[in-house]
Length: 189
Image 1 (cartoon, one colour):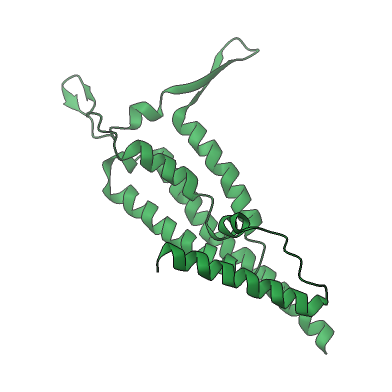
Image 2 (cartoon, helix red, strand yellow):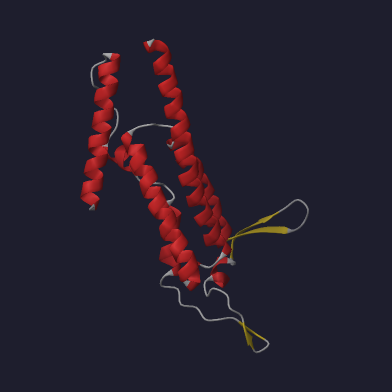
């Protein structure tokens, strides 16, 4: 399916959801969102840190570390991820350093939180979001297992976040749909 097909399917799904809500409520159709809102609703936000890591890791060659004549089998990117990005002096007298990798993980945690909030809706666009999240997890898992620059703790944690996005999204959507279904049954009888 092409990108244009995905965007079209998402727009159609949102339009169908709006029509259903309008038919149930009797309120006239007022356009509340834009195409950008549909785009953010369909695509998982964890694509952003995965793309950032890919942009850094794929062209990064780096060399193998050699300590006392022994070559360590570590990812070439590990030295770059462990460089301090920010340092803060603490009251205790030490400096607290946040590395590049830790900053990317912190950013990813924030996006994971927003993804879990997004998963509370039960529309068709949410189902497309879950499918794309599953594809993203599979891509991350393959990169982690096969590419040397992706065999780091930072990327492993990001990969686990994509897995949690898939699991939490599906579970939250099922629970929300079951609750909606149960409420609908109670009023229909």
